[in-house]
Image 1 (cartoon, helix red, strand yellow):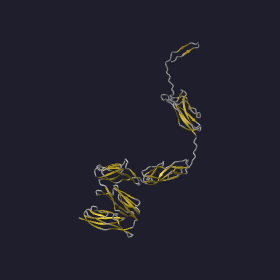
Image 2: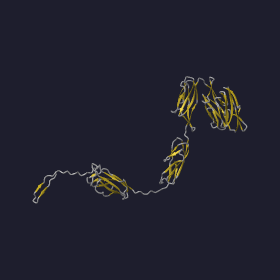
Image 3: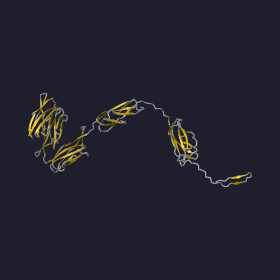
Image 4: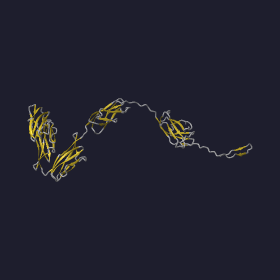
Length: 482
């Protein structure tokens, strides 16, 4: 409230009656936390003319613009030039400044509302950068790879090729990678080569500058696969309560072998635990006499070991025939027979261990020998702790003229058998009995069966027996009477 006092010329005064109370509106005050400081960029060229605009926005506690206040801008570096403010804060509470600099440096700016003496919350930082100097261009002259030849395996590990550009300071270092056959090998844009399938592909790297190229020849070999399991020995003769050792090998497609006897992935089963028990590498016979089969599994492959528990001892191991003469490329079978102390005999051809003294001349597997090259070598078989051997001679292949059979027509009754001999005649005038080497087949195995030239009648009817040797084939007509 207020009163008014009036005086006349003589100094006489009379106070007025007190006025009614009047409330004046409060002036808005800048709130430091609501207000802000922003810039239109954070990077400016330090050339003295390029500039950035900094805006101070004044707001009160209710986020209303503060109008008509004066603001000052300060820099933490003395090299920055700050223009005068655009004026008091406008109807949006804004005051703008422009800043420049000739010195390359980072400058932090802060603002103060001089009317209220309030320092605005926050600051802005502007980087004044040196003027960019146009780059010097250096062209690519050539490119090379760290490998020109690379061998990978199908399904195997990847490999990374590394490219080197000359000169090393060439301006454009970008390259592109490509494969001539992505069905064989692929390459990504970092030079990582992935083998896909067996074959050959050219991996090429090309520079974007100048199209310079370098190439690596990639050969992808077939994946090494597990082909079979091999047991050694394949047959074991034991007396009751006795033990024997054995080994299991994994045979791979590249010819390599690995002993997997104790591998945790190798699984052993035996057909009769009453006959024997088995654990990795060891078979132990029980008290019961008889035969059992150990089945070994590894991956998708299996192998078997035949186990015989007997009180009889091995007396002799014999091979038949005791001598073999073959031409290169021919095959023949050898039988292995074990004679025991109880006078019994056992055909152990398929479970004996077979070796060739010279695998380059003759290859042997389960008694089947194949002549590979001219020469003489020895084939050996082992079973039950005994060994037998025969000599095999391989002669140069002669040119075959024809083959003939000792009989072209055969008449039999049911269950009767007859052996037919096949002879090979050569252009040099020589001849050889090739009955065992020929391949035999029958047109109707319900009427006859044939093995090694021996024809056996099964039931009444007619059938045709064929014998084939080195591309020559002859027929034998067989009639089986009722």
